[in-house]
Length: 339
Image (cartoon, rainbow, N blue to C red):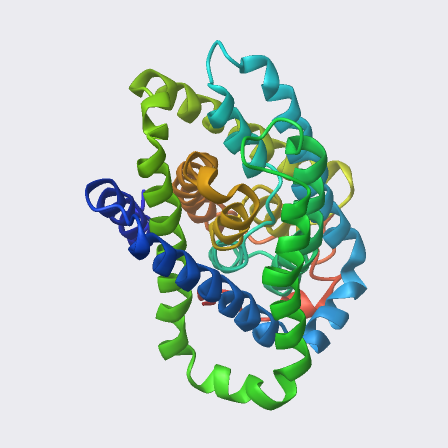
């Protein structure tokens, strides 16, 4: 079971914020830098998303609608149902973080990687993850406004306006300028990759510094954290089962079901952290804690599932559970992890 090195960096950043939180003037500087980093991060997202690939991916619309429904309908329904666990198992801030977790878009990179390892429909996973991230920029704040607006401390519908200017506008700008700067970003992706991750680390440090300054960590106990982990384990297990057998019930072949399972059961840390910072402000630290834990859990579990799927026998051409005949684009080699 892999431990994501980046998650370790995130935990280290949380520890740094606990020991040396930014306050006073330094907090203002860090907050301003975090705001700029988030805007630049979503500008890069816009530059990297190929409009042509997205349009080509629409041809497999049934699969993409299925993934979007899992991400933005089924997940939130379970999040709402978890309200019954408050306050016996989860405190209000932890429940709000859990509910926010169910609202964020799916991942891109890990969905592609695990789909490739399991010999699934990689092109579909690429498009499904991209669509989910694109839709999430609009849908996640709207869902948060409707489901969290009246209860979340520090959250308001004004945050939706904030997220439009801080996330959506830079994303659209990246799409519009992609023609001129897309080549540069592609050529220097190894340099810009650490910029992506560094931006998110800055967001985490800012959020947890504000949390330390407000003393909100006194609201969390080890028993509550264990309870949160248990709830998230059940949530992940249910979504993995639903996406796999639900895909079969909808008539999808093996390769498509793999893409649906890995794209439809995941939540994006890269998108969720910046959104939480904008939506929750100074209360973002507890709001992102469930997402950080779920992220590591989904990587560990899906890595095991992907390796087992890779050992499945090849379906015969035209077999009911094979999809190569139905979707010729899936016949390309998929034995390497796409990054």
